Image (cartoon, rainbow, N blue to C red; front, side):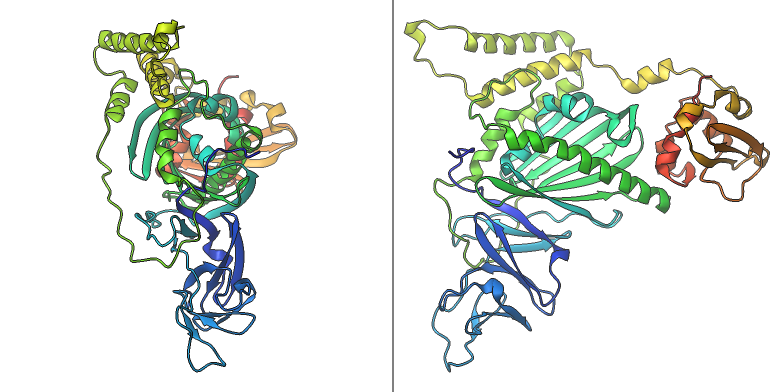
Amino acid sequence: MRRFPFTSFPHGWFVIGFSSDLAPGEVKTVHYFGRDIVLFRSVSGVLSAVDKTCPHLGAHLGGGRVDGECLRCPFHDWAFDARGHCIEVPYAPKIPANARVAVWPLVEQNGVVMVFHGPAGEAPAWQPPALEEEGWTANKTIRWEIRSHPQEVGENTVDCSHLAPVHHVIRTEVLEMEQKAHRMRVLLHLHATGHVIGMPDEVNDVHLDVTLNGLGMIISQTHVITGGLFTRQRIHPTPIDEERIAIFAVGNTKHMPDAGYTAEIDEIFWQAFVTDFAKDFPIWENKAYLERPLLAGGDGPIGSYRKWCRQFYAKVEVATAAAPATPQPPTQNVNSASSLTRFLARYSDGAGPLGSVVSGVAGLVERVRASAAPVSSASSSAPRPREDELDLDLHLADQSEAGAKKKNVAQTNAAGAQKRFPSVDSYFDTLERRFNPSAAGELEAVFQWILTDNQELNRFAEVRNGTIQTKGGLHKAPTVSIEMASDDYLKMINGELNGALAFSTGRGTLRGPVRLAMRMQRIFPLDA
């Protein structure tokens, strides 16, 4: 019995490899959409994806070899160019008519190889967007293989209610949602703990801007507002067969003034993403796909997402796409907003008269209750609300209520923050008394503080096996060094300036392992 009710693999652009997987002159067979696809890169670097079967006598072209700009069949040495045309039969004076192999529409950009799966003979109606690379770190990549479906992976982006139990997110709001043709965009506002990076007590204010281009390309732009950090995760789920998918993931971090700090943050966020994203895998592999799920308020716009997904399926399984025609550029209208977008943007921010919000919510709730109430035999023929309509009503009601109740975390923290230290001197004078030996454990490290505007305040602390000794001046080889103006450091220790934000914007410089620096607040707690 099939787990998923879809009658075909979805249409669209899907990743079938990383650019680094194939060097010039190499041939490789990959298996996606239930069939073999042969990739070959010519000696000049041109990459092509062709059907496995030679049109001559059916040999598997994956066993062939690259000859200049062509792929030669392993059986009779017929040569096929990047367009799939046979350009030479070594032992025949004339090439047979229609001697060609089917070619997949292919785009190679941003470090990944994408092919278009769609109706045979039809050129892609849209092209995958190229992403900006300047100002971002080099790609970090990983490939997973699990039992699931691309639609399930995309559904996670709108499944708000799973973020708390699975990903340690305290609160989620949908700020915007837009669906236009093959493109869907969701802007989420999260309050997330630092659990995944080993700082469970930290709460970060995060904007997650997710764009889906079909079901094979998910681009997640993450802005950690509290830390001034920008990262980008690309998630590409591709069907292997009816039961399994490959997930290609790529991560980047936006460059910050300090290259060393950028590199460490890039690695920390990438490892956090790899760890956190994989938490969904056992759920996806074992869950059933329910065509009509029971949805509740706060689930997120799942029904609307599923309705949008319907456009990517055919009634019957499609054959391998034929040679592409010249693709037309996609129509883009980033600034257009649906009525849903305007509604969410307005009420999730708590704008508008509160009475109108409550009234609107009450109306939505009444509609939901009415649709769920028992009906008499006389009215039993009335149409049942569509899954997406019910979902949106519940979701909007929940978001409006959240908008009316929400609090500004930053303001709350600022109001609650107390000036623990009247001066930087008072911080250093109490450092040994505040030292927490149990948090330090068997650590051996030297922590250096360099105050750029007053060298007399420079201090360092030697921590060894649960003991501490502080001294003035500079150490020859500190393990961790923090360098910033004394006024900024005072603001940071008093909770008026976020440390990560200071380092990401150049107001301070951090040298040494970032993860060790993150432990400093436990080793040197602010309260004695």
